[in-house]
Length: 334
Image 1: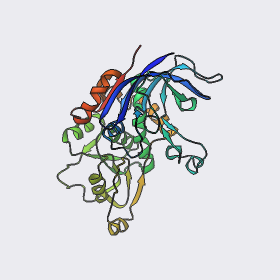
Image 2: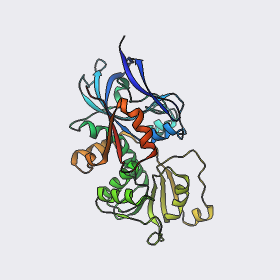
Image 3: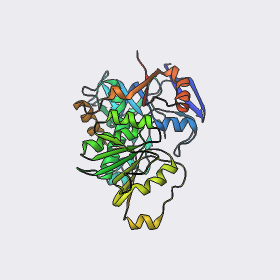
Image 4: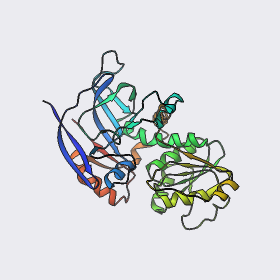
């Protein structure tokens, strides 16, 4: 009986490498071998017990570059093909799916969150959730998902030419928002309590300026679109104050707590409040095109690497100290 290694989070604060029976592909599924797994803020939240949509134990990993091992008869994929994974498995029947919003499907199952993900040697994935790499490297494939979240948020916010945009939070998701806001022609500022991280974002995304975290000068007029990508309730609540009259506020991050705001101020500005969850196939295609064009330097975003066994120690260390960390990548070769 074939077995594979899997990195399991049995409960908050614990990771262990387990030997498991290799999975089998079901109807309409391909059996794939994860080759690169990006470590996401979601994975850190799962490890820390802060994720609101999760049950333990869980094999994490949803930012995936995979190689097809076995494809079902009639599929356009073949063994050896490299693919991006869209990790959002939707029902296709609910009110959201009928409105072409599978990213917020009533019964959504996200790989690595609602069901086991890619930190393992083999996994089954529905064929329709596999996107051929078509020239992208493995590293680039594994970066598509987190960049797609930013692309989706920008599309949700309706960012256009000449808009004044503020992005609060300069982590990987915030970087995706920055890239696609600039591609939309917006004037963009980034705000982060970590001045080094804000400066890194400015250096990675051309044309972005830094807003001071300690001085609101220049923020008083507000912004046409404000994005929160912090995952911090206090920052999310403060962000309402940065929205211009007639502007929009897009919450990209998610927290367990209740978020509150001043209703008089909200109505005085006629604020549009939007949640942005996951991404759609349209966003994945947009990101893959941008990476192929060279608009997003994925190689500069990957700052830390490890293998599957090393991730058991590396993920807890990175969760505690993110100094210099943009995107960590788990490599599975051979």
